[in-house]
Length: 149
Image 1 (cartoon, rainbow, N blue to C red):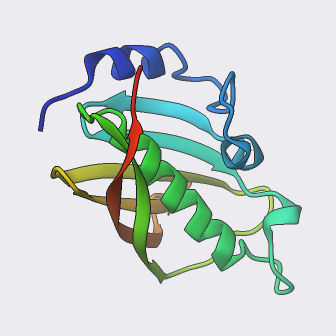
Image 2: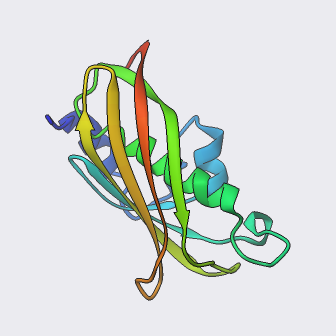
């Protein structure tokens, strides 16, 4: 896979800052993460679990976990040299442990393959102690929408 050096340079200026800065995606703004690292095929971000993201049991809702992993996988894909935007065509999540409001979680995403039509990406979510809380994989399909950075 060839790296998208322009996208990596753009994203790198936001390391240590909110990922939502100047980002038009409302989901990115809602999740409100801080970019920790970016490289060709990989990204890491930190999020704080908020009460409005928890279920009735007081732990991070599975839908929000899915959203976090999916968003990170999709965003990480732009670190690769792609010609078109990709959209998720399937998403598989393993929910292993919970996280409560106020906890910091880290999501690490990695692209494994980018084909002309399908990309394969994985993400893992950890708590502050490094315990794996959830993991997911996704296939994303190329759209006809050109990607320009």
